[in-house]
Length: 119
Image (cartoon, rainbow, N blue to C red; front, side, top):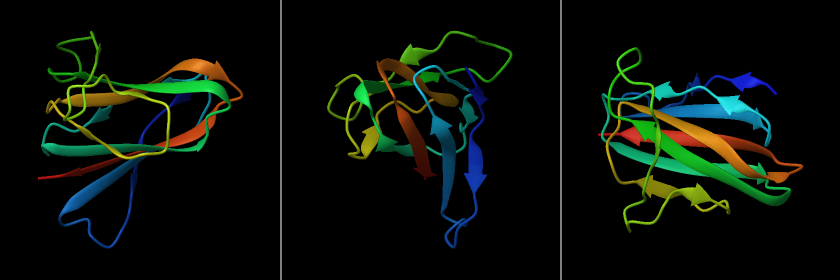
């Protein structure tokens, strides 16, 4: 099991958006949260190999680090729980202070999780 930190990815539009990426995530890993309270619009996409039955939950917490340790499964804009099973980008409905992916199922999973925030 590895602990994976989100990395801020440099790009040509950093004045309007931030791109965060958790790289090389397997079903046994723990992803540390990105601190993203300053931007309201958030989109998540999982890319790579979902293996057999792979699933990534997108979780969030309202309060900043140190004030709250409980994370909850987030919903997309259609009210569906954000358990990601495909490479389709999804918009995160609630604006949270901290966001993290959590591998929740599967074997032979090897994915990158990308978070784009604007607003």
